[in-house]
Image 1 (tube, rainbow, N blue to C red):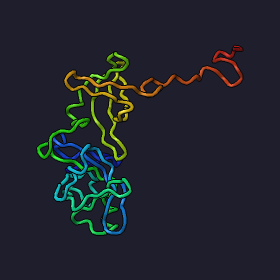
Image 2: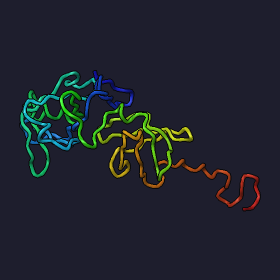
Image 3: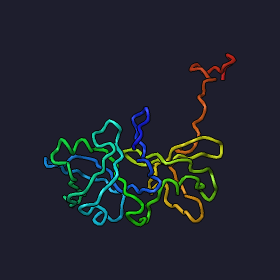
Image 4: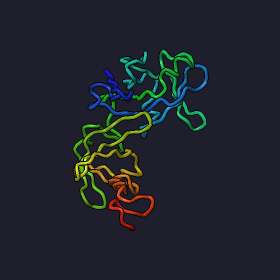
Length: 208
């Protein structure tokens, strides 16, 4: 079962601790039910073979909620991955699946390089410039990208895009991951300078 929170965001399918996210359906393609894919796998031709079946992460209101999705055909078109699925016969049916996330059971495939399960990431130390600055407390799976929720040393929670440019290294054996965030992503916003008036007087009324 895929739960939905009040914001409309969907959570991974039940039991996803033993599942690997391998793709997202991003756009209907043509009139015969094809869908363009965003891939999260290093072996798409091996992963999307005819007959391969995926668990779907979709909102509860989706007609595909609770149903599996099986590959009928996978091809590359103008360097873009495109797939046809069983039961998706036209563009209207394909559009119902746009933004769906595809998961595969851990037992169905060995883990790929640069692919981790949520339970492997939660609890890892977060290292920046050689110093431990916090801990991973959860992984949020959004349609656009995954986010790591970090609990920093000052007890703030921040969200960091789980992309190589910001999280270049994950070392499960060492129990840590490295972050190289852009300036301002982890820093606390400064307090509003509300003690100064536009006229240049401070809160006491004296000239600054």
